[in-house]
Amino acid sequence: MDEQVLTGGGVNHVVRVGDTVRRPVGPWTPAVHALLGHLAARGFTGAPRSHGIDGEGREILDFVPGDVPGYPLPEWVLLDATLVTVARLLRDFHDATADFPKNPDMDWYFPPQSPPEVICHGDVAPYNTVFRDGLPVAFIDFDTAHPGPRVWDVAYAAYRFVPLSDPGLTATYPVAEQARRLRLFADAYGLDDAARRALTGTAQARLDHLVAHMHEQAAAGHEGFASHVARGDDRLYRAEIEHLARHRDAFQSALTL
Image (tube, rainbow, N blue to C red; front, side, top):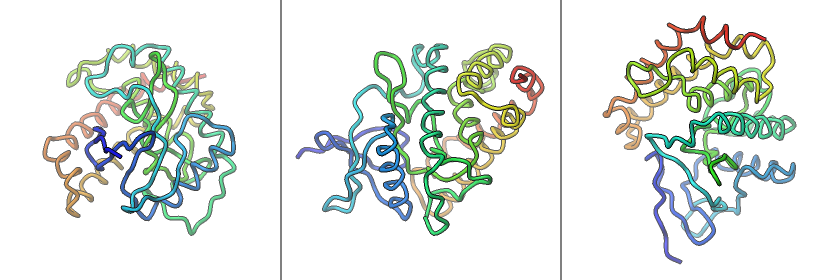
């Protein structure tokens, strides 16, 4: 069948073949496929199903129909309804993984984070979210999944969807509106008090983790990550870390129950 190249983050070569997606595999692929099977068994519909490996050694996944937005984000991605819906979808995903077996022999793309409360997606963002009729219905690209605390995933998803970006560098909301939207996201997820206290610091740590990973992969010869570093993505994320630190009190005050 004809293959259609799917554009995205520029890290992997991904194609559509009929109603399936074919993607490169890695040491983490068995764990991801076990996770997707677990989600299916739990009735979670917001993820593709896996169908093994094809003759070219690529994993076979469902193609999830809908719209996957890129940057600059369309206005409908930034609606309050999107924040609420994606937060609830993330909560449902986490709840469905809470009893996934935490096998220490499983290989994951990222090392497990402590405590391993759930399986984190690892990259919840608009570019990994399928929308239909303007609302999120599914997450895709589970390569970066790994065990960790809920707030590790929530903080990064909030960074991407609120978004918690420096208005001086990016066309985004003022800090006061970011704080309101952050509270809306945390409330829709049902985040507990301890995770709320940790959220802003966790978002900083998550971005620091991302910068370190980008440089490690670029140094190892990964062309996709090298291109991200070359265009200055790492400098942008460091500026976002400073933005989070500078306005930590405002964000934490908004999150207080």
